[in-house]
Every structure is written in structure tokens, then in C-alpha cells.
Image 1 (spheres, rainbow, N blue to C red):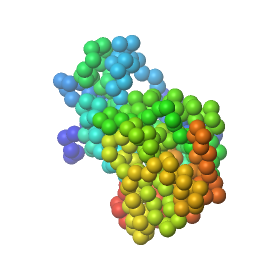
Image 2: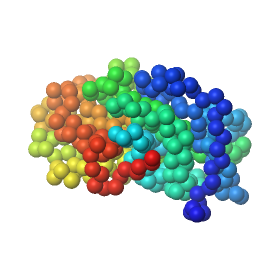
Image 3: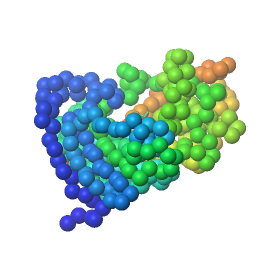
Image 4: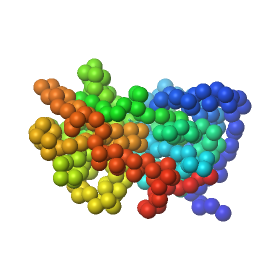
Length: 365
Ligand code: PLP
Ligand code: COI
């Protein structure tokens, strides 16, 4: 017997899945977000029936009406998580329960019906199991999972929709940054903020990313990899990057990251690294840090390292920071010692090559 909130999944196998040789060629160098597996999850919600009609079906386009609410008012949320190939050829998930929780919290913020945690987790397990051949075996490779949900009601009135589609697609992935960059350069956004108090910054909704793209485009024009957003009230304190949290490492060996508080995405990688650092006896602070202090500390040498972290980026050293009238390097511009140590500790747990003292890893098969 299963829990009442877990639906039985109807399975429709792909009639012509990607051939083994073609899949092997795709897995050799998947990049990020470009290659997709054969199947996807679809579950429907209506106000009168709740969640129903759970399916694993061939991945492909879906038909929506031009008046579909999400196309107009952007009532949409998503998650990002990974399945890993274990050393013995099995597969595992990392803190999937935390993604389920955050997805439910995002839903609440966007006035959407939460997907019950156990249904969310079941959908992930089902898809990874069906498309298991797509989990890369290469070092650094993983199967990126993208659960998402949107208002699918055909209606132009402005109110929470009464119909939703929840879906999961899967995408074999290598490094997020091109060429597995040893370090990235950030662009400090002067004109644009990402999230204001009372807004949706802590929710993983598509609108947050839409609003960040003009700043990301500016970063790309400036030959930088990611945007740093500052707080919307004083335009002084570092919040996070367009798609990653940020950490600072000081000469005394302590580390710091901006505190959560509604305007920052509560990253699961962020929380895991805070825990691992504390476990190793590192002094950890969740405190505000101004852009001016960042520059002054990098120039004086008090700040030794900085890194970005997230599911897609894992842990990526920040080598340089640029903005209008600002250009400074961090340390020697390459990966720092503590950054490397934390990255290795995290990756070893995720990939099952080190013990998992916090019970973060779920073995799938
Ligand atoms: N901040 C933003 C804006 C993100 O998009 C992400 C990526 O998911 C993160 C932080 C890191 O979150 P996580 O570590 O849970 O992937
Ligand atoms: C993730 O890390 O899962 C994200 O959603 C970030 C995005 C830049 C891909």
C-alpha cells in the first residue's frame, strides 16, 4: 500500500526512444540544458478533483490554449535537482526532500496548490528509473531534473488559476559554465535589482529569472558570466547571483554568506555547505556584506576567496568582479583552498564516494 497522496503513474513508453549509440554520443558532451531524455512526467490539477491523472509519457510538445493563464500572468514555479550515477553503477538523489519542500513553499507564495511532497518525490523516482540510461557516467556528469508547474487554465481574469499542470523533464548535464571554467567573472548590476522585501525573491518562480535577464544580458555584453544583485532597499548589500548563492572566505579561515530573509533563494547547496563547513570547525556567518566591503577586503587581502554555489553550478570559484567603475580580482583569480575543499566534500557525498553523515543521499537503484 502507498500513501493516499501518491497516485499510480500510468506509463506510456516512447515508441522510438533515442538509439543507444546516439544516446552515448549525446552523453559524451551534454553541456547544460540542451539534451533531454525520452520521457516526462505530467500530472494534472483541477480545483474540483485535486491532483490526478499522473503519467510518465514520451517527452514532447504540449498543446496549450493562447489564453492559457501562465502565458499572461506568469503563475509558474520550478525546481532544479540532480540524479547521480553511483560508483557501482546505481543512481542516487541528493536532498530531494528539500527540493520537494521548497517547491511547496514556492507554490504557496504564488497562490498555487502545492504538490504533496510524497507525490513530488514519487514523480522524480519514477522518471529517473524509466530514463536511467540517461544518467551520465562521466566525472562531473549528472542527470539534471527540472520539475515545474504552471497555471494551465484558459482564462484571462487576474486571480489564481483553477487548473495546473505539474511536469518533470530530465536533462543529462556536464558543467554549467562553458568549458567547466576554473573560475567565473561577475558583473555587478547597477540599475537592476532581483527582489524586494515582500516580493517573490525566495520563491523559485520563472518571473524572478525573467526580471534578471536584462542584467544577465548586460553581464554577457561585458564578457562576464553571471550577475551579482544587490539589495533593493539600499543598493549596497550583496544578495545573490542570477542563478546561484554566493560565499566569501576570509584570511582568518571564516566564511560568510548573505542571510536569507525573503529576497534570496534559500539554496540547498548553500545550506549543505554551511553544514559541512560547521562540521569541519569552520566559523560560519550568515550576515550582510556590502559591495564596498567586498571590494576593500579583496584589495587588502582580508578576503581570500569567493565562490558561487547551486545545483547547476555546484561550487564555482569567483575570480574577478566587475561593475561600473569597479574591477577587482579575488585572491589570485583561481580556485581557493577552502573553496576547493568544500566543493570536494560536497561532491564526494553527492556521488557516494564519501560517507553521508546527514542522511542527504537517497539510493534509487
Ligand atoms: N539562487 C538562485 C537564484 C538560483 O536559481 C539557484 C539555483 O537553483 C540557487 C540560488 C541555488 O539553489 P540550490 O543550491 O538549491 O540549487
Ligand atoms: C539550478 O541550479 O538548478 C538553477 O535553477 C539555476 C539555473 C541557473 C540553472
